Length: 268
Image (cartoon, rainbow, N blue to C red):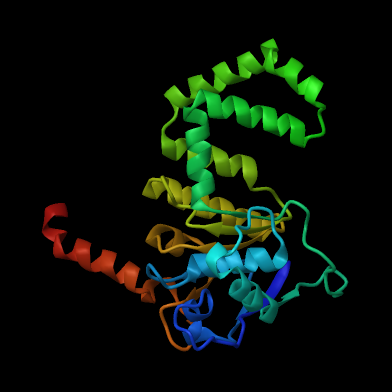
């Protein structure tokens, strides 16, 4: 399922070279990205892939979107106003009116926070109570829950899990709990904390969700393991003008090949 068909970047670039985010995208201003079931935004550090994901999330009002840079809020708002998008079509070829309710933007910081939350009991307790309140529980009921055996047992189980699982395993659990069928997900470097084998496992899971269970992914990454496993359209943000590429054509992937080729004799 294609929920987000396309996104057009603002075609305006302010003359002031310090204006954000105009000059992040000055080389691709006005470009239109056409999305597949899985689309990857690839680029080196500073290429703007994370800023582009956040811009899309802000334009779509997705859960998890971060407010654009406070010091440049007026310019960021102007940039977003000049961006546009087109939603996909339903089974009767009518343009969608809205995105699925569970669609969201997940950043590497979200995953790291999840790990930290598990590792810090006080933060965990506060988070569990906040979850109760966000589900419509009254403050009095939340206070009762705070003193309950149920909460104490849940805290003990999670703290036991902290000892049992590594950061990478916690990350995998995070994705298993938060990636669901029939949603649009924007993911920023989901490979954070994952071993190569788990990066491949996660990518295969996303392939299955996209191919069989009507989820759509737009992902920022430069992991060769994720790039080589996903059945994805790949936009190379390092190129001017913007164009798509095959995963084995990308500089980061070639660097890995060259590195291991240089040390080939150690593996023979």
